[in-house]
Structure formats: structure tokens, C-alpha cells
Image 1 (cartoon, helix red, strand yellow):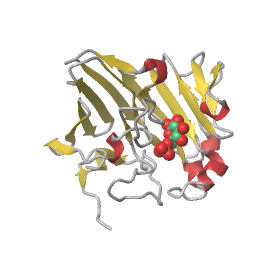
Image 2: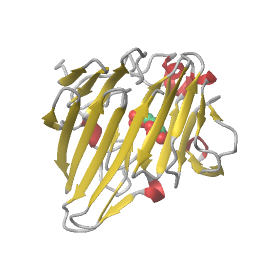
Image 3: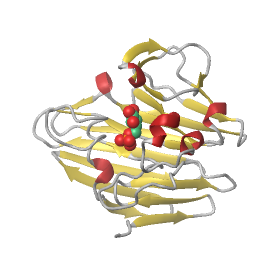
Image 4: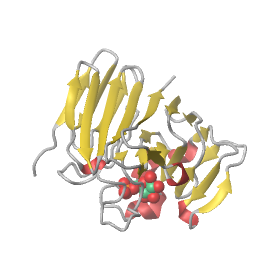
Length: 264
Ligand code: BG6
């Protein structure tokens, strides 16, 4: 099997790794912390296969392709080979050009993890796309964590036929398979993890959707790239623009979405 090429970051502030395939941030560990990103021990790390964990870049569609053409789940960005265009000790930039989109992804690893996804439309016509930084956060036990920031926000429940529901005032807890697409929210989310006695903050700009995902027991059992108990150690808090929040770009226009992850 061909090994995937990656860039390793190692500074006094943080350790990390980004694969060129998918410009995929696989690890980020700020000094003195446990790893902040979950990575499945059974993930494929092979050309053309999606990586399970870290921060997959979902682009230019979320979920199944809906324009009638064939294409992989969550778009082609996460399995494409990106070009490293800038690299210093802790700042990296990757680019990818396809289907009339020029995509740039900036990563800065330090005491915070700063990510920026910038998309330019050079199709010559108006273009629509969806995107997500499908961030897998590592937690001691997902059943013990709570997530704030989404109170009063409407979401589509993908485990229940996309039924629309409004999140109640109490912090979100995970007690079953969860696949919720929160719409029209720019809010910062805070994951409180009592097991590892830390909070993980996900703050964003240029993003109107947040996706919360945990596959729970049965779905995990059907996934070849997750260990049977892996669902307990992760929660995805995805910075996104999907569904009615999809981005429509004029010809030549650029859109930028950022996420900052930190453990205060
Ligand atoms: C989430 C989707 O963002 O990603 C889920 O809302 C999906 O429906 C999950 O199951 C994982 O997707 P994939 O393609 O990486 O298995």
C-alpha cells in the first residue's frame, strides 16, 4: 500500500499533522494537552480513500451529490491530492482546482487551531456549493459531554427523515445516534468534557450551518473504518454551509469560511 504523504508540525506550542490528500488535518495537540482531534485507529490511510477522523474537508457538496451526476459522498475535496503552496513552522496553505472552483485551505497550528477555507468561482457563471470542516473532536466519553451554543436553533434531524425541530434551551447531550444539521447559526459552540476536564471551543466566521454527528453503536458496527467502541471517544462539530445555507457565488467571486478550535 502506498503511504500517504503528510506534513508534520512540531513547535513548542503544538504538534500536528496534515495529509496532502484532502489537505486533511489529522492531528493537533497543543502543548500540555491530550490530542484535541479524534482519529480512528482503523481509518484507511490510502490513496483515494476518505480518512476517518481529524478534519475532513467536505466540498463541493454535503452528503450525496444532488445534481444528477455521479460523485462520492461529501464531495471530491477530501479524497483529492492538494498542493502545498506555503509552509512555515506552523502555517500551511494548500490549494486545489477542479470543476471551476479554486479552493485554498489555510492551517495555523499553535495554542489554537485556525482553519480557513476559501473558494473562488471561475466557472464563468454563478455557482452553488456546500462545504464543511467535518471536525472530529476527541472526548473521554461522548455520553458525558454537553454542547452549548445551539439553544433555540432549528435543525434537520437526519436520523428522522430530515424532520425539522428547534433545539431546546438546555445544553445538547448525546444519548443516541445523532446527525443534526443546525441552520442559520453563526454561534460559537462549546463542548464540555468532564472526563478529561476540559472545554473545546469551536468559533467560526462565514458559516451559517453547524452539524453535530455521532454514529452511536449500531451505525459504528457497520463502518469498516471505526473500532466498535470508537463512537464513545468522538463528537463531530462541523463548521459548514449546507442545504439552504449553501453558498451561491457570482463569477469571479470568493467566499471564505473559518473555524478556530481551542481549549481554554
Ligand atoms: C455527517 C453526515 O456530516 O457525516 C452524516 O451528516 C454522515 O450523515 C457523516 O454519516 C459521516 O459521513 P462519511 O461519508 O464520512 O461516512
